Length: 120
Image (cartoon, rainbow, N blue to C red; front, top):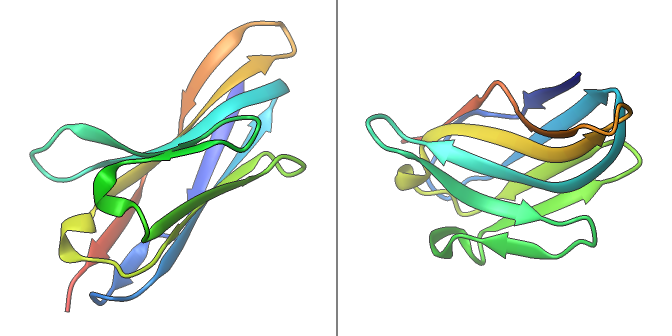
C-alpha cells in the first residue's frame, strides 16, 4: 500500500503564491512519474504538471512560466510552486505518483486533494 498526503492549499489573492506538497509513504520500492492534476467545479480533472524520475518536466500551457514542479526523491515528495495565481487557477489539486511497490506491483496512487482558491 502507498499513501499520499497533500498540504499547502488555501485562499490567496490574485497575483499571490502557494506551494503544494505531496508526501508518499508505504511499501515503496521506487517512484517513477509524479505529478499534479486539478479539477474545477463542473469540469473534468486536467493535468497541471508532471515530473519524471530523471527530473524531466511537463506543464499545461496555461501554467507555463508561473508554476514549477519539483521532487525530493529522498523524501518521496513532490512539490508544486504556484506563482502569479489567477482566479481561473481555482480548483481542487490532486497529486499522483506512479510507483513500484516492494511486492513488485505497479501502482498509480492519488492524493486526497487540496483546495486552492484564488480570489480577492
